[in-house]
Length: 568
Image (cartoon, rainbow, N blue to C red; front, top):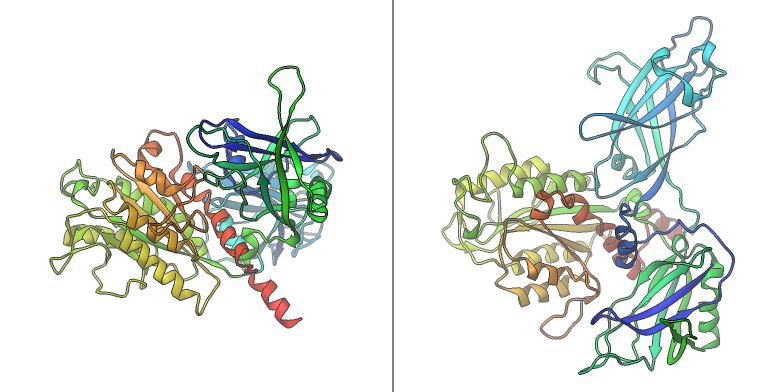
């Protein structure tokens, strides 16, 4: 297996510089691809496959189980279920049966895919397996024939956010946890099934690229693919686009062992670095002739082996995601008392788009915030003192923007209260709420580097301060902050797509400063309502990658690693 590097010009999507295919080496697992990157996303999504995830193994143990056997102790087995939205239980796996033990530590692991962007409820049930079934494989056991010992439930994110990734739950009967009888406890420990944390940081540059543009120079990017056993390529990374440049130097990238699979796959890149030599690009032939050899060359400016920590490594060591919300109170939403208004509160309990976004995003993020106090702001409304404000507390509190409300329910209550006390006005300005979030994120760096902030902006309109918003986002790209934008209603959200920068072009400020990273993710709610996407998955799928980019660029390590290095 080897790596293939190809370059393209973004205008028209044409092959501009050809591919530099490195010498193939040994075969390995071709399915083990990881890393949040648009080249990877496109490869999988274009084939109808689901988003990438982290594979987790759950280890189970129990303490002080009930003894239902007469002549001996219970013979327990645990069964794990995923609880679906409609309440159905889908079995994920079973442990082995441990004989004659009320404090079992099962050896068998339960494998489950952890997806940050969705809530994953789990149900655990423990059974005493009757002696006459001991010779039957556990997968073949009929659970209704076994004695029920207890049940517990939690959300997968509750396990992985624990500092030791172990959550202890009280077992109860089928009727719920309120019954006081002691059924014992169940402990669940989570481990990532990552083969290695090894990674390499690589910096690329090219020289003498072909110019395929008529009135300017090419705008190149580099796509890196892995050559699999069949000879086909699987994309694993795409660099940023560099405008108008035939001798581009890209920012350093980090490739994990999951992406390149084998050290041999990147061996030729290391040789290029050590020898300070270049690899010649070739333009694949469209017919049966020979490939065209180009003057273009690829150089490796940096090649450093390092240990790369995962999102769960940081979260389980004590890092937190602090949630903030900003709601659009401009007049274009319509009178909240009118059923056609985007802010209309339906007496039947049906959520409007603003409520839906708050609930669905908040329900996921809340598990990664220990105090669950969330700053909740509005913008574009005429507030309690009669002036139009572009950042005000939804609960009416004067100042103190960093002081939050209690939980997702507190945000919902503050939002409903503000609709009765704030007049809709305008225009639609993002700058102040982004700057306020950035100030809070920046201030946290002086006393706590283990916090990462997530601002959710929900809006219905076209921005009046597009350039000011770009300037604010470019400044904020240096901070531990990500911004999620939900567009509600039928407005033209082209501006939001620009802010999202998913086309590979990073935002530029009015002073030509380029954002250090992409911190924005946008999704229009109308696509959610049409069933095309899930608002939660669409908004949150990039968040772990943005979090990791920030931590890795600043060489911030998980807290337990920092403590170990300090004590060493």
